[in-house]
Length: 370
Image (cartoon, rainbow, N blue to C red; front, side, top):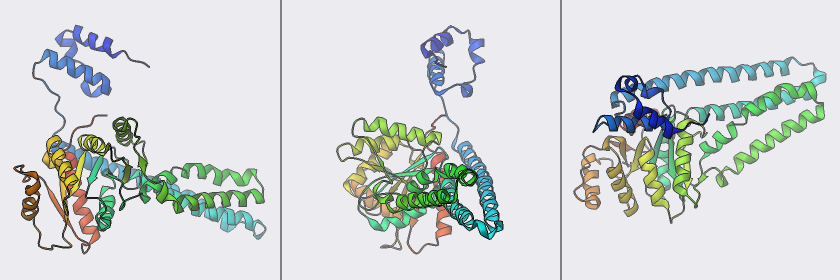
């Protein structure tokens, strides 16, 4: 149905106060909410919509995490049941059907891998994003990248810009490959009923080759190229797809951005992402610009500053602030949360701590409405 929002705005303006008070903003579409907000501003000078408080957002995020976790458990049980059913069939087949038994065993293996990829990508489809900014060409940051990927599960989808250290994302490849699990499922169940032994072997071979080629070549395609023509619009659509849960990735989403427009893309990502993570271990001129932009566009509580302690074990937030202050001038870094990491950290403990800090930053981030 096509809605004439100009007519809707005119309708709101004609309503008497009692009628307009009956309109529930939360029941409206995003465009209708914009009409409602403009009318409220006209009727009540100085009125502005205020989103939920951080404490309320935190409760919402924790509830979402629990709900998504239950869904993943149910999906895991469903996929495991189908795989077990097919295995039982393959075990109980007579020796004369050895080809069919091998077919089922191969299909179960492929389905298990694809199902694992699908579940992994589903754990990042919360609708929230965290932008990770860092100094380029630092392979040692891979330790933190793995922690960030793990901490973001059931919380948000991390995104970052492509460089020589992070050329592709295995998690993104897993998410794209995992989409085909629902295609493999009917093939696995119905192919033996309709086809002969030779065709069974061909289908199993095709599935294995497709899966193997996709995994072996993911370094050449597992990233998202931002279009040079209209990069800002492209990124806005991409973030909207993430918010709606339409984009699948089992880890960090890596953006390939041209040098001529990278600042436009990063600035939009800073303003639209739910939280920002900036690694200040080795600040560069570009990183200082990103930090200045984040300070200008975001609440400090939604920007997490991270720093490695591998080279300086006794480093503290005060030391980092003092070092950054040389490039930032008089800007106050006190309200910004800090997170220190090291290769020697116990992974599970640090991942849990990082997940809690990310959740807090998202709770203080901008309200992005459905």
